[in-house]
Length: 383
Image: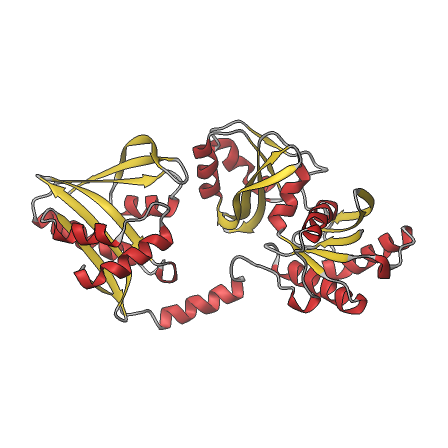
């Protein structure tokens, strides 16, 4: 079985042909030329040097994203064109998975870092049992601070690779608290050979698709799309109403809780909380639906915030801050003078919000959270 694989998801352009367990040829270049200049000539050169008839290949593998929007589109167009012309199926290889597979057999956690700019990375976490790869954290687009916090919480040695390493090495050196290493130069960028080997496994498992169905997964919007969306949101911000939560809203709150948290409250838990005189719960309502909520339990002159949640489509609109402002104001009216809360050490956005509201770290609790297990920061503020 022969597979032709290509990867143009980043600065590197790479093409390779694998036959069963044998790498027949690979052409990889990391230079400033565009992929529209390099990719097809590279494929042609590999095919020519191997004296390969493209009609003899069984499938075409391509990096399926995330990565450079332009690079992914060039790779997708090339793979689809070949698939249509040759009548061959396509195999989409998650870009970060393919990059991680460069380090097959590595005894540490493997963390690919692809630079996504603005202190963001395309990343994931992987481990190997022998040469079998297991996904610990699926590929995602997050801040470098978030993935480092996740790694530190895991407490295991890690090996980094990818073009994001060069960009974020100073931050890694300052903030990574577990043993770490960087992959050597011949393994630290995308390689079509790794994608081809993974594609062989996918093919045997029946994970191929018609050329017409191949679509890259970008994981986030392009800059132009983000700017258009921001402009639209600035013109059409939703009408948010902050109110005391009612019994009619507990089912919606529980559904939102289940979508966000690994150990969610049940609807009955919300019902019981509303019945408690020492509890205060607020809901953020948009078009009659619960878009977010927060809650606190009061005892004497102290309060403990238990829940803060906002539905993903309505984040970055200041809803959590508005909810907490109402909650803290009423807690103060009821005589509370010290407010406490726990937050996952990796939840950087929430920590930044609490710091903005004058919460300060007062301690930590080892293994406080489960699924996954993680430490909690205890934060406190005076009213």
